[in-house]
Image 1 (tube, rainbow, N blue to C red):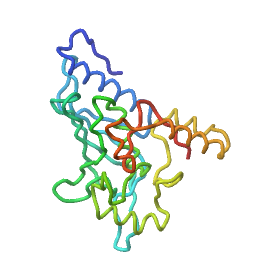
Image 2 (tube, rainbow, N blue to C red):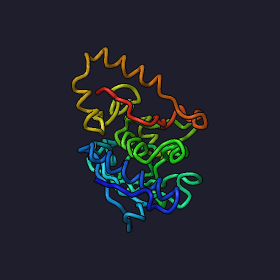
Image 3 (cartoon, helix red, strand yellow):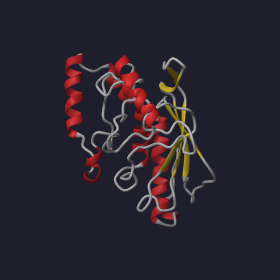
Length: 237
């Protein structure tokens, strides 16, 4: 269990970083699909500024010569909290393992860069929210492959999604269209296993999505990667 004596922390940023560390530890403790590692030195008066988050979920990590998807079930993300975080800078996120996703750069100088529309994170959302959001991107619960704003991060992958994966039914943005439909948090996954009949569950999901809306400055990106509010939105399988 991670804990801090907040009276001994020097400034508001350190207190925020300590809160983030506690939240990261708690969310990973609640999930068999998430684990974390602190990057760099840290201590009772020096909270971490960087993490490696490991996701044990199914995703597409590449394609073969026949355009068939290749799958993997271990994905590592590096998250760094720069000096201006949370007020003037947002978390910097990149994949350390291969992945094939329209909103993550798959090759080149910026390989691993995640387009998560995360400019509101830090001010309005916390690191545990971002971790869950990246997980849903990896699972293909959340993706944007259409060549419109906010635009895919990797157009080659986006074209494959539009022209191959979606027509084949391997992925789609509707219910049941993710590569991995499981929930990242154990308690929510258990609750879903005990949910009402499927028709009722679908109605519940629709009402939750209607209640969830991005912050005002993100509304132009409604057709792309979506921001979830603080807390967890249950997604039936």
